[in-house]
Length: 292
Image (cartoon, rainbow, N blue to C red; front, side, top):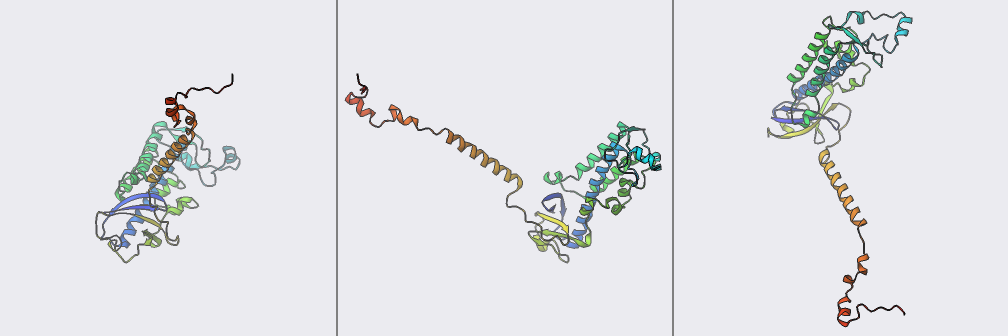
């Protein structure tokens, strides 16, 4: 199996196993689906961590308002009253004003937090550094576990304006509207895959670019159309560059110490005088020329 190290710019995303015989259309379809699902897991995990800390999201017209302002404007979030955690709640106000501040109990919060952290770890770019490939089955399993944890804590469901509910109901555009995360979502029709400074074109197969050796490993960059050719990979890796910089620094410090230790005062010593032996034989080595 060919191993693809998929990057976005200089950032590692994941490793993916495939075959040299795969058509580029099919490969792009799989990579785009996996990349979008991975980003969804990361978004959901962050929202669930906030849910564990501060409870459900407030209605859009109430976000950022204080309790006094809500009361003054006579705004009521009926969904916040309906969507209560199964084990009771605890007060933990959200400093950003996005969530109700009625967080789940410590025990249920730990369920949400643990599930979210485990899901983030499974799709983390650290997996690429550890040479572990990512599959759609693993990402789907993460989404199912995140869904299950919210159902355990909120059996009555979440409000319709809750980003977590939108994500789980695949209302992705609504969930990411106006957010930076929307720029990370790819569309299959406009996605491009680059390798060795060349775009891997649709209508061809992977072996047209990398050959038929199934043990090949390449670094490919996935991006939107119109972003131009991505930067080439550096000749030396980041780790090798760190080692080279550390060696250069150690060498510089050694040279600095040698420069500081340079001392030619020994030239005035008797043992460094080339004529000291001659004077010793002539008996004039200890002659004093001081006047009496």
